[in-house]
Length: 205
Image 1 (cartoon, rainbow, N blue to C red):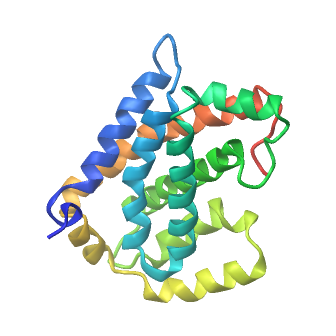
Image 2 (image 1 turned 90 degrees about the horizontal axis):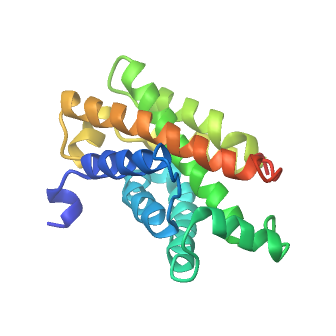
């Protein structure tokens, strides 16, 4: 069995983001690229658990988290990462660290909305929660072809019970970890938004 099958990935995710949120709320409020990318890498398997509908998101997210992890060897903080790209005039360039940071943040936001919807949605189907999360976070940035492919993939989503089984959680424990992630990630997402907005870079590109 793999580590993912024997451990509690949801708990690891929520604990990592609680630590990031604590950093964001501390007096220094300086987030290191290494700790951020490490926490984000724990989220990657979640996209895989959702099946073909989110395969594009998994591949895109994993590649961009890896880029940030590589960047952490040279750049210490998220602030410095943005400032460096601004100096080099590469912020909006495809493949830039800043652009990848924005895409990773979008992935975190998608998972947050998905968890919010899972908690408030009755029944065993994930189609409604996943569709709402996709529509809110990703759809505005995707072309027709990707939106159509995702819509088709929604029919192959696991059930809520199957997802919880993959995550080694029951409904009660999963709800606690999801709520922890929702609260913590909201603060981290807001922090990243502020990094971009304070530099007048916008967050909708």
